[in-house]
Amino acid sequence: GESVGLHLPTLSVQEGDNSIINCAYSNSASDYFIWYKQESGKGPQFIIDIRSNMDKRQGQRVTVLLNKTVKHLSLQIAATQPGDSAVYFCAESGGSNYKLTFGKGTLLTVNP
Amino acid sequence: SAVISQKPSRDICQRGTSLTIQCQVDSQVTMMFWYRQQPGQSLTLIATANQGSEATYESGFVIDKFPISRPNLTFSTLTVSNMSPEDSSIYLCSAHTGSPSQPQHFGDGTRLSIL
Image (tube, rainbow over all chains, first blue to last red; front, side, top):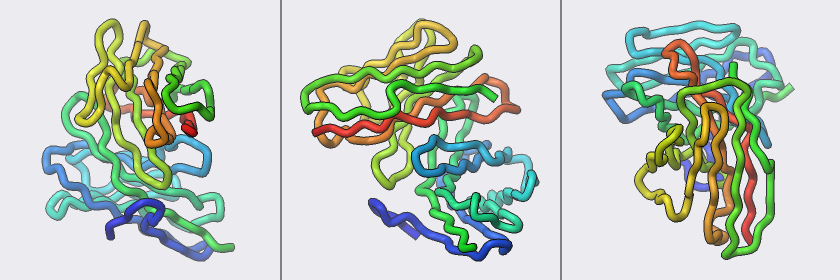
């Protein structure tokens, strides 16, 4: 749901569980989507990206799913580890200018 | 992937003063961007730093407040002018090679507090 100020959407999981982080986007013209992980005191770190001509893309322990019909993006993390604890942002762009519009972010906490 | 270094990593400044943040990329890149991240919030694009020409600013951001330079393909600066406490934020530099197969990479940001 909506987040204001410090109240990021949060997801708390047990170590070893799978995590699913969701993101809704608003611009139908967006054709590129990307997930970043941001740890405290660091800049966003690239995780995985996907173009609008694909529905699914897999990386190492991560999968991104894109549903253009409902403008929804999700990030699945398999066998979540304590080191996965961070804020996760989705972002979108359209055209060739590569300007990113970021979502609000989700705080993932992995309990050992 | 490009390695992006920002200086300073953090600073505490008096209101009314200005601070210039530097961004250095370890390889030539087509595009460089500046973002602002207010405490506990997401990232908002300030401007695209254009090499050899004036930056392109997003709605709500103006050159007088956030002058940007980009003298070459590896370096850019962002100045936060006439600072007020509302300017307390993290300022992040990013870079993109211009290749569709490459993602945009970020520096670790400059954490700015205005007293």
